[in-house]
Image (cartoon, rainbow, N blue to C red; front, side):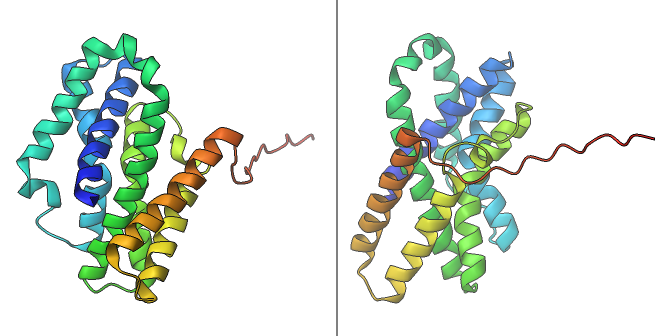
Length: 206
């Protein structure tokens, strides 16, 4: 189940990266690069942080073809993709949860402590979007819109709690997905977000 959701998620993330690149009028190489990094950047950063080599996608070349192909396919169909906006939001939410759980499991298998496991899950979940927005010269959306990074945090904590309680893995994943999807989609529907820190230093007057 998790692998299937992962493949769907990296495809959707690659397409979102391609759309962001298109808004910046990038060429074919730029679109391909942003699509690839949006889809697989989170896992790459996680593996580098944890010293988990070889990096996961280097052992699965099909992921490269899938993400770059999805990015390039986005170009000719971009004009009609706005009709699939709600579907993309759902796939993005599912991807966030899948990436987070996978990141946690990778860190657990490597024997890291719980705080590191949680950060590995969050990094996997959100860092692709951060790379996309940095490359497209905009403030990362995952840090300033409806609950997103915090959903990744809560999913990671829930997944680890259920694991600690001895809940069977498939049930754990289903429960984490249900809670994560409900929270993320509710945040989109009602605009839930964390308090915003806005700092504008005043001018000194002599």
